[in-house]
Length: 398
Image: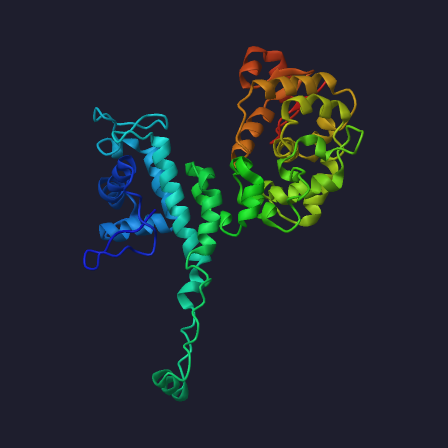
């Protein structure tokens, strides 16, 4: 967000000011710098005791701090009931609601995210301009020559780099894709990206919610220059051996690495992850055929589901349910449940929450046997209890 004017000098701070051309934007700026930051100074520990301007700058300069502030607004909207209001002075919390200034809440959030990103880009990308060497001091003979008209002054370089050239180049190309709360924590990971990479990704940047994936896409060679889709943004058919519905282990390994799915495992030992990838790549063709219509549009969801299934069920159960013949009926039932389940955003925490809950339901002979189902079928419950205690979901597919 832009900086403030100094009361003494009238000059702007290091960050660009909000544009005063739009009264709606000016109203949002005034609210943020005034009543909103006052609420935050009372509620956010790191902002308590700071002067208003210092608290505002601290929140806007630090993505982690801004994320905490936005989370407070989303989880405790009652704290802002007298601050974030519509034209009728009624509190609003939905993104589509219109603020008293005429802008929607979503537009206000986008303005905050963009302003914070701009500040961060400048701090990280333009720091060298603060330490530029001063022009060399003229020698005595040079000064005498200039005074006598016997020498010409050193020409000024007209094309010297602008102080904010690097940050502005990135900001201008990424600006339209900075819209949501969840992007605040990704600002440090947007910073190393080149403007050309952001331009190549375009709106697909909004499909990436994981820092690991941004880092992977920023790595040299991971975004094809021939117009092909980057691996992480392709569909699940990219995982398959050409002409077959069989997972190619090495491509699966690349996706797992780029998504940093080692986070799913208690130990991040490479040998352990490699073993899991090898087993998942043996997923039976019938299971693949059932899952592709549901998850196949996104290589990340498809891969995440299989890896979450492996870590949730355990290796032996995964082999039994996903890698053996005779699983057509159970695989179709699983696909049906995926179709009817919530579609999580491409964020590992959300995918793990949704898919783990779905996989925790047992299947017996292809029949759903979750807690409510078991209570209504005492014989089925008794049969499962006879198997003994287990921390893994039970699945006996017929």
